[in-house]
Image 1: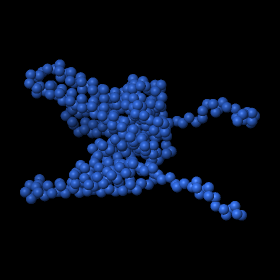
Image 2 (image 1 turned 120 degrees about the horizontal axis):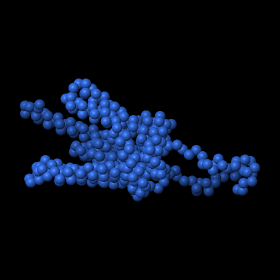
Image 3 (image 1 turned 90 degrees about the vertical axis):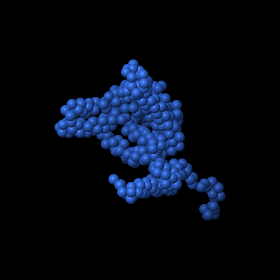
Image 4 (image 1 turned 135 degrees about the vertical axis):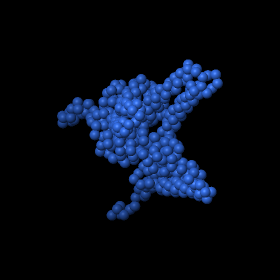
Length: 107
Length: 274
C-alpha cells in the first residue's frame, strides 16, 4: 500500500518538457515581407513585390493543416500591403484623370 | 490516383523545409546561365539586325557578316535548348533525393552531363518533336489563310486548328510528363522505353496531373506580380510536388525475389539459428 502512494522521484526527474516545433523561417520571412509591403505600399512596385512575396512565403510555410501564427500575420499584412498599393494606384490614376478633365480634355 | 493533390503539396512543403537554400541556389544557377545565353542571343540578334538593315555606314549589303550573326543566334538558341535538357535531369535528381530523404548536393545538378548526356538531349528532342507535330495543321492553315487573304472560312479553320494545337500539346505533355523522371532513375533504359513507360503510367491519371498543374496558376500569377523574384521559391515547390506525384505513381517493388525463394516451412524456421 505504501508503495502505491509513494511518488517515484526518478519519474519526475526524467520528465521532459514537450519539444517545441522548430521555428518556421518561411513564416517569419512572410511576416517581414508583409510589413515591408505595407511600408513601401506608397511606392507602387514596392508594395506589389513585397506583398506578393509575403503571400508566397506564407503559403509555402503551411506544412500542417493550419497556418502558423507568423504565417497568418504575414498573409494578412501582405494582403493589406497589396490593397494599399491598389488604392494608391487608383488614386494616382484618378487624380491624373481629374487634372486632365479640369484642363478640358480627358479623352 | 488514391492520394489528393493537397496531400502531395503538403508532403512537398514538408520535404522542402530545410532544403530551400539548396533548391533556391540551383534555381539561381540555372536562371543565371540561361540569362547569360539569352543576353548573348539578344545582342547577337541586335548586331545582326543592324548590319542586315545596312544602317551602319559602309556595311550595307555585307551578307556574309549578316549570315554569321544569324548563325551565332541559331547556335546560341541550340546551346540554350541543350543546356535546359541537360540541367533538367540534374534538377530532378536533386528533388528525387530530397523526396526520398537522401542527401542532396549541388553537384547533383551536373547529373545530366555525367550520365549519358546524348540520351537526355535525344529525349528532350523527341518530346519537342512530338509536341510540335500538333502545330503542323495550324501552320498549314495559316499559310493558306495568308494566301487567300483571310477569308471567313479560313479564320474559322484557324481557330479550330489552334484549339486542336492547344489540346494536342496539353495531352501529349501530360502523357510524356514522367519520361524524364523514369530516365533519371534508370539512365540505362532506352529513350523510347521511357516514353512508353511514361504513357503507361499516365493512363487514367492525366486528369489529376492536369489539375495539379492548374492549381499552380495562382502562385504563378503572384510570381509575375513580384517581377519574377518569387519564382526562386515557387519553382522548387512545383518541382517537389511533381516529384511527389511521380513517387506516388511509379510502380512499387512489392517483394524482393529472395523473400519468395526463402523456405518458410515450420521445420526450416525451427532449425533457423537466432
